[in-house]
Image 1 (tube, rainbow, N blue to C red):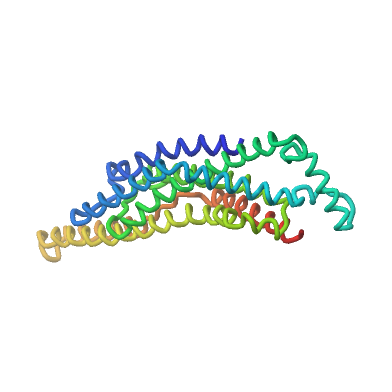
Image 2 (cartoon, rainbow, N blue to C red):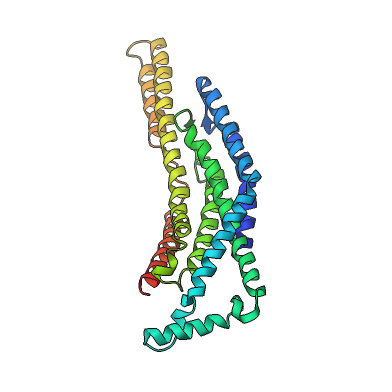
Amino acid sequence: MIAAFTLLIAFENCRRIADFPSGLHARGLMLVPPPSRTTVRVALVRANRYFAVCGRHSWAVALVSLVIAGLLSGAYREGGVFLWLAPGTDDEARREWSMRAYASWWASPEAGGLTGPAAYALVASGIAYVMIKHNLMGLCMMSFFLAIRKDVAYAFDTANADGCHGWKAMHDLLSGVVVSVLISLVGFCSLFLSLSVRQVSWTTPFLLLFLLCVPIYLLVPLVLLRSGTKRYREQEIARLRDCFAELRQRAAPGSLEQFEIARVERQEIAVIRDGRVRLFRLKEVVATLSVYVGSVVTTLVRILNR
């Protein structure tokens, strides 16, 4: 179910990603100065090349996914998968009970030959494949915006008609990515709840990958957006000052018109200076952190207590 839901979100995010950069530029939110247009085009071509490489090397992702499934199967085979269900307090007796429980588990070779392990490997590798491909897609997209971070400025809608200062598309895209990563994180962490520190070391690199995904996919775009809008404010305020300076020169010195121009200038500059793009409300941030921190803490506590 986790893999299926993640796959649906991944397809939806692919659709959003395909139109995202061009949509930003068309709505006047991504401002590309003429000297930077070649750089941005090169970065876009490079990002598309990354997407193509990920598609051509799907076999490598499938191989890594099989390795993950194999590592998990190996960790389970040590008998830790059912240890947390074992009755009693004697460690040796509980381990023996866990080993017997594993031997009767449908996915163990002892229970039904190779059919169970093969089915488990297929399901586990399929889940890992979807999760890895989704993360690679996010990294390709992020590489583009990191490459152009110094070459573009991000404008915003001062009227805030969509509640995100014109950045509702980015809110939707990031929400989809974060939701899918959180779901994957919960599902992936659940695989580790029954393993000990010694067993989980087999798959620690993959667990760390998912633990880092949420902060990366959430914080990096927000930092880039904040930096880009700061650049836009500086450029827009400089442009407004030049425009109003020209208007004041045309008005008679000390006239009422000059005072009115100065008043309007202060208002316009204040609107731009105080403009802040807030994509997520506090309750959304709290909910995301709760799921993320809860999954991480629960997993670590269960692992370290074995």
